[in-house]
Image (cartoon, rainbow, N blue to C red; front, side):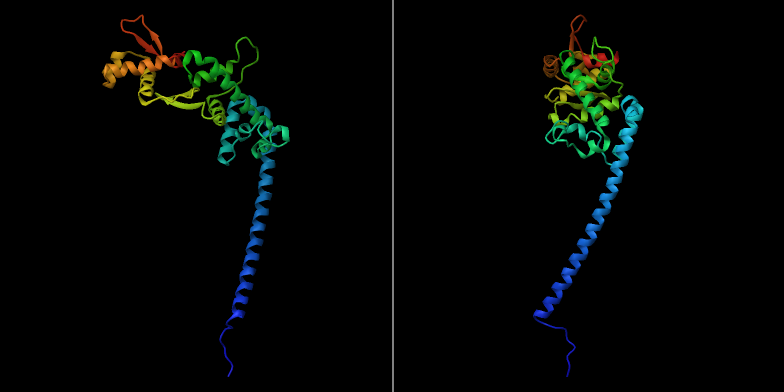
Length: 263
């Protein structure tokens, strides 16, 4: 009497191995096909973005509004226009004839603009550190970059606050030396490694609102002990983050960053 039962023993394992191998080869074929399709789409996308950046390179560099819209478009599709600036001159950079994939896609004009702007931001922060203690308002920074170097004709760059903020992002590889900080609703660039503690940040925010502070004002408005207010002010004065006006009836303390922003 014939048996209808499935094969057992080694034959069953052999059939299972054959089926598993067939599934694996089919899956690999699908992955290869999908990878090739994605590679083709990425190639078309790279070419289109690269051609756009080359065609409109002049507008991107000279027109702040157009540049801002271009940067927003890049962000919307997941492209970082600053990636090329972050690795400029690094291993595999210009010397090796290679660069980041985004630098190749966007062309040197776009990434070089932010690289140049980043250099100028560093220069302005260093030039003004003696007068503001390393805390400069973004608006003041933008004005100085647009104005250019003193005594030089044509050294300015037509930039917006948005450009400055993006350039500061490109400085992250410097190890956090340049960071954005919001005080009293205004954005500042801190170019010194020292972090502000909570009390110092509070005093600078009060100065943003009232233009200046005194020890008695801090005591009355923040309910601080006199010793606490004096200690915080002394630290800010030592770091050149506030200026002292001793001509008033009670010594006043002003923020140089706020004075420039207001002017």
